[in-house]
Image (cartoon, rainbow, N blue to C red; front, side, top):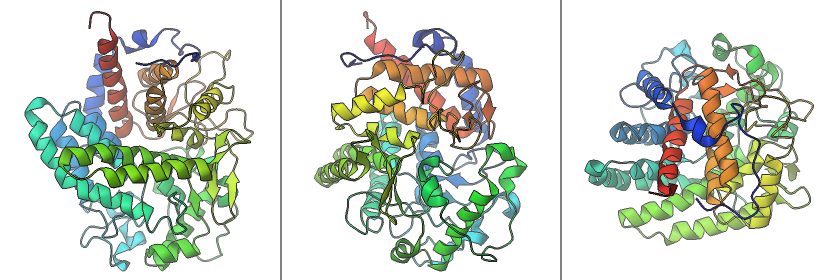
Length: 473
């Protein structure tokens, strides 16, 4: 791998060894990861976990398909096909496709709360949520195709041809109804759409939302049946989550009405960086399936310019979430600020600024004994919490995204540190939903599918890269 001149390195990972040492003796862990995915397989998709998440989640399935494709390409392809069967006529890919076989009381809010049949654009006979999630799917589809064994290349290419129209429609939706001002960045209308539900990145906006007394139905939080309340969003934040859902439902999920009325309207750097990365994947997919890639190249260029124009704040040397409703940029130092590393054309001075922040005491506290990267929030912030959902813990999906971004900008030392730390977290605590960056303990769901899947991809791809770079390779 190309290594940028002058690249610095994070401190060694907690075991005190190199990436090569971290990757040794991982065969048993890879086998255990496959067992997790097989146990959570339903026959057409993979549950995120057995208890807390019994349905099909959108970006979970994308991550799962990538990891699954190393061992079972057919199931990886079916994973994404099943998800896209729930795509809306507008092109929106919903955050959840509900499994009718799951008990109604297994998850809140369920289909009876969403009531997406109110929208004529919703798929008939297939209950879903009424919001979306980060559009990682084109990138996932391309990775699944790249991993296809030679005997399945033709089947994989035929699958790409079937999936391509849905992938293209997903991006057209985000460039249309979700960019009503034509500024080039897609807007999210609910924290759940970010994938980082409880991130401090939108605290300033979210805390201003007032839930009118009596406006919510009676409900019970099933997530607290399976995880500690100290690890999950507070009751006050959960009320706001549900309140936003009721506003979207009252608008019959009409995008124009939702955007006009929602008190939560954010241009998220992570959401849009993933969108840009997937747009680049669509360029390659279009070439593979015999379609003109030029529209995707143009869309990628426009989004690249919009990210820099709208979300890069030079005086802060940081990408910031943009609260469009109040026209303010949110200054919190969270992991969403690093996601534009996924832009392959990000200017080198900005790449360097992001890497300086990644190496700062806010995200890598050297000299404190064992420490794991990358925490999702500034460790020096007064409200940093190493155990609470997205407010400090390490997640393997954000590690995986940053690993890709760093690698494509030649920051091999930082990328290797992320792999080594991720391996040590799994070795120490298993395939947990997220991890304490200070002591490596696991939190949230156990035997979590995207942790198993992305661990597989990190290890297998790192091994393959090492083999390519070996002197006798």
